[in-house]
Length: 488
Image (cartoon, rainbow, N blue to C red):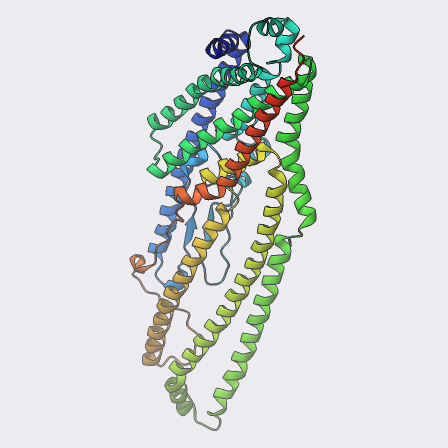
């Protein structure tokens, strides 16, 4: 009996004209979104490689370490094809310098404002909006539709347990909708393979998990349709109720949660943070300039009353020591500035993290938000993407600053020795320079932050649990509601 009911439900779905239209639309949308995503990813890779080569060429052409100012670029992630997340919103590069802080800038949307307005359509977007709506379209009349047509009363003229009937409805609807929709998904995966997207084993695992989460999210809306159909007598009523619920879950709750979190947790603006850093940096440089002027007057006090030749000898004999003292004082000052920037950035990040956690907790009342968070976590395009790259860039900046300080000190020492030999008098030299370029192979290399499958899955477990819980609750509700349903 159960198999017969499932077969009946399958035929009802597969032979329906709206299934053909739905399947065609989903196939076109999924394949087109993946194809466009692959093209955009390859264009981003080409831009990334070209920009990296130009930056390395600029470093190799410098004749002094004082003229070296490298840039670090964020490497595109192939998983952005399926779930873009914040990938296009955050910056793509940052200058690495001892004078400025690390900050990603020049996002894709800042260069292409049209896409910032209308956004890209990726696989996760299609699942979240389109497929969830199609699931409602096929299940809003699963129970009350049969009651209106009279087939429900006819079915229960036989000895059919109500639990078996509602379970067969779910299984038939799930098989009839999910399995055919896996065809365009698998075709999209095949398209990525044919077009040569460089996916590692970890990324294939993330993609497989993303597809599984998408199926679970789709299952929730199938169960939601059965629940509402079991609670209403007319299919028109259930469709209207489901449409209102869909709008609230998919469109309103995620945005309302973000707005509420913005009011509950105050985060200083970027302008306020930068102003705080600039004030501290300016004060420290002013204090450094004053200390240097006072130190110079104290040093030259020992040369009072000397002849010009004696004064020159006095300066030549002490220049190395004075330069070392100035370098040490400057390095201490730069460390203070860097430490202040780190503390300010850490406070800002903590406030943002607190605001995000509040927003996520409120947004997770909606399965659509739980799915979006799980998808971006698995794809590595979640809100922590910027922090991961900036942390890696700051670690690289620390190593670079230590390296460049040694190289510039060496150049200054050589310049002072040359100045002393030429007896060219007192002058400030910022680097020796020369005709030959610097040896850039000695520079430390930036290492991309790596995200393992476990680290991507861990923050998604809560969202997976919520999706599973929502689905089970809907099924339990539909089961209980149908036990009391009037089939007449």
